Image (cartoon, rainbow, N blue to C red; front, side, top):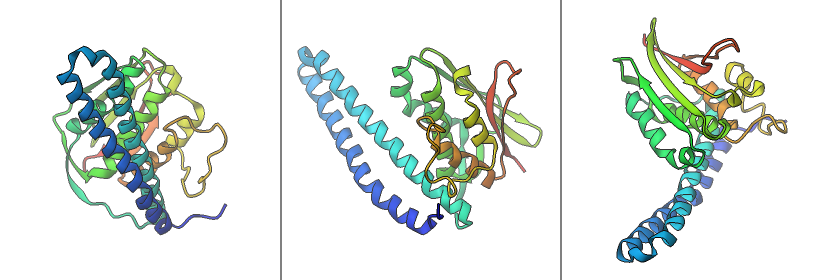
Length: 240
């Protein structure tokens, strides 16, 4: 299949993000109105709570779609060599905490136990804020979708050598061979605009972007072998 130019992808991404952003705005407005009605009419709160939940799901699902669109566009730009990193100071612990907080609706929906153990003193890292945010969010989206209900996801952060190591300790259901090959290999989004049937679970297409983005900023990445207990997807950001 012919490669799609990154400038076309960028324009299409912009056009797609506008209506999705409108859906997010109206979902948020509806949530505020429902909360106000529940406060004014407490006798109807039990009937209004599900409506607020649905609005929250629309908002979060719409934000995931915008992230997927943005990730797709960035992946093409990286592979075309035109992506320009806008480096800034990022508090990585705060970023991780915020991403988990934003995903609470889906986490609660699957009764998952998700936690972060940030063991390093190094929390500020200079990189592209939007790019690293999309990497974390794409990974968490995939891991939440792939995790079996009631299981645990633990994130450990340690300084290791001259890098900052992020380990995502995951249930066995996440260790799909094709997903592991995508994360550790050299699959490119420009050569796979139409994924092979069944190759990617929900959130998995963003894994191609995550692998390309980590490679672009000089991070090593990998998956523990099957003898590891617990087993993880991991990446290591360079500190020098």
